[in-house]
Image (cartoon, rainbow, N blue to C red; front, side, top):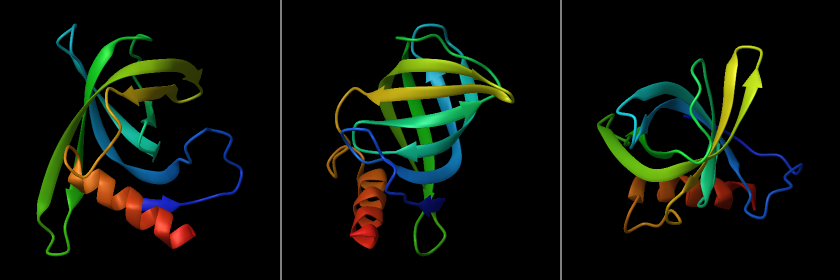
Length: 121
């Protein structure tokens, strides 16, 4: 995953640019959408995808992280679609996590966010 940070942030919690593949699966409609993670923070994340999901739909997002030895680790985070916007190549999708990202529940994403925020301080 690739990291980038800018001072142009207007959200209450700074989002870190974090680019990588994700699966966003509906918890009610038994379908999943392949998406690209664009940014994330402890409260939620932004994605883009060819397919759309429905605002307020409960979802589970699956990410994959590689550790320093190249071993793949997956995390699944429950959340809810906060918003969906049409985009020239598909849809932009905002997800709010059901719980804030923490080391106990999402150790890989939490560590990545902690490391990225330390690098920008």
